[in-house]
Amino acid sequence: MFYIRNFEGNKNEFEFFQEMLYESVIIPVNKPSKEVLLNSPDIRKYHEGWGRKGDTVLIAFDAENQTVGAVWYRLFDENNKSYGYIDSNTPEIGIAVSKDVRGRGRGLGTLLMRKIIQQAQDEGYNTISLSVDLENSVAINIYNKLGFQDYEVVGTSKTMIYKL
Image (tube, rainbow, N blue to C red; front, side):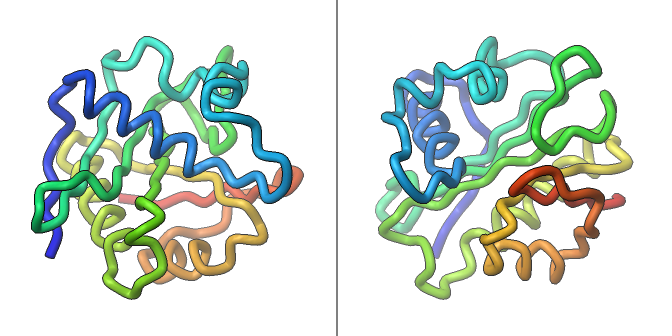
């Protein structure tokens, strides 16, 4: 059993969000430390100055009130494109589930994705996007089942779009 709520902005939740951001970056071999990766220019843009217009995080908790996953989105623009950039009105989603919950068939990732889709719809967005590693077939299958469509492939990542 999981429950999901909006990010409250406290230090512990922000640190958990950063941990989940780190987990969401797939680097199969020689992944840099959390500090190094999160401070690299390509990744720092996903969390630096968090709390601006369009920033949204949902945090998942288990029955013992432990944080077990997060999903988020952020708007980017032409001068600061993200990996899954479509346009300045399309937030890009990121998601991660804690290692001890991941892959256990409990559906937390799907639940988080459904909640963030609903959140984006409630906030009036027309589309949302995400970037996924081409090797991450499990995630790609889930995104397809949820209704995401292929947009483009750049390097080792696929950008997908969901029309709300």
